[in-house]
Length: 395
Image 1 (cartoon, rainbow, N blue to C red):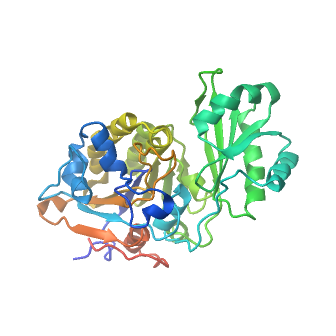
Image 2: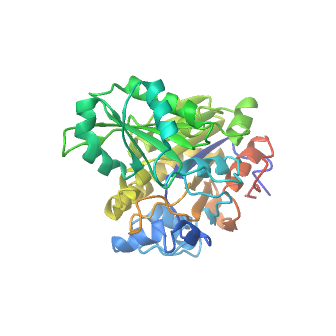
Image 3: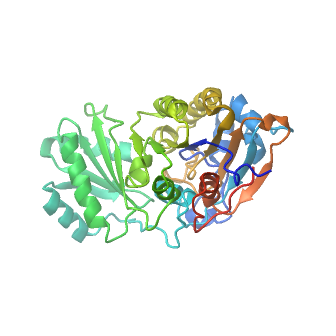
């Protein structure tokens, strides 16, 4: 029996562990990411991970993870997904999951943004600009933060991703002014198809600056309908938790919940899922990527993995008898990589759990050829679509 095709689940929790990759993809060398394995390398760096719940679900069957051995009889379906789109960024990964596979990668700016863009941004936003270079966010804020506070000029930087990042101290530039400037940048950069404009507010004093959870992402709008659009058009509630709203430019959501880190994201997801009789809760847990992956901190990454694992039984309980839980990621960000501080081109894990699966019904889902299989599965369950890409997973 294929419960998905029969619409067997009244509600679905789709949990994206941002950047929790499961090993290099075959084309990783094209991205400079040979040897990347976020889960495997993090586990080795800390002499083993303690993740009994994800382990029982079959995560250790997906890739070698010290401390999380493979199991003979997992209590969830398990596998991994390959990214069909070029790139390794948040927007590309989430859009593909939701059914939009890109043929061309978003552009990147290895030497900073052209003078024409910066001049137009400065003229229309009313702010001068510092930086305009490829940089680590924490490093450039520490280096230019004092000058920013003295002059009021915004710190602009980018990375190996298609991002225009704008940093400002919350006491120097109020949040509403920072967001307004980012909207100006978003309007200018649509022509250039830059994936995201990111507001990066920070607080503190020179030598002790720290970024806050008032970050906002201003993404391009998806070029066509995603599974979220199809669901809301069909009257199916869709709740976005964390930066889902920002990634999809607010489209396809009936409700959005701002979060401040992984713990808050998990608690808000549980609450939304418990309150829901029918529909989708779509959650992004950002701390893996923002706090630990880019900062190349495997110890912090390991703690975040173990804390998420410890919370999972609550989400399974919230699913009840007619709910489905999908756990995956959007790309890698190997915290042990010594070649850059950027995302890594990796497979992502795919774990699917529902009631009754412990009775020997768990399946090895193998390697899916696109992230869109996840979105197609959600679409099929609620009787919308089909999406242009992906194959629904029989459960």
